[in-house]
Image 1 (cartoon, rainbow, N blue to C red):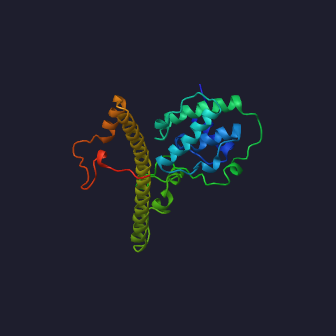
Image 2 (tube, helix red, strand yellow):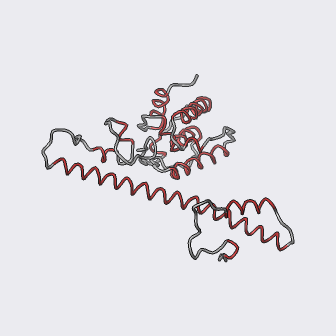
Length: 252
């Protein structure tokens, strides 16, 4: 049996000098990167986003972790798609494995976690931040981006002067608007991130198909990939003026 959640969080906070309260926070990937850095001291911590709040940032952290696993010949698979969802059970199992690996490989050397990340903030949310403040107060609310601002210090239902209540309601709504704006920006960045990768794949496939056609050859696998890239679903319409893939002219 591995350590309990409480024991793991206490160990993690002591090692990394952070203030995590839930195992789910490890789903951002930053803590996993720094655990490995405490062993080997060669993780590019300047590139690790310890206060990541969006899934595309989590994925960036896990790419750094995957590179480190390859570099140190660690053959443990990293279930990135599960971990970035910040679910407790998936991250608990992976954190337990990381703790066992650390116990077996940490050399006992001193480790200054704050200096290694150059004092970068670590206010990581438990999950991707909710759109509205939590119904209950407490430390968990502060783990969400904007949670403290949205919740306010005094409940609106408390006995306050009439002029203060509308003002606090406005502040709450403004916080939710900022929250929504932050989510929208994150979703747009994530969309562009994946679109650029698909576009690169499309270009590479097209170049290879054209090269084979010039030699009088064909590759059914590449054709299948193109079908997937260019397929549409019911209700999806190609925007007016958009060129068909075969009519596009690439400029390099």
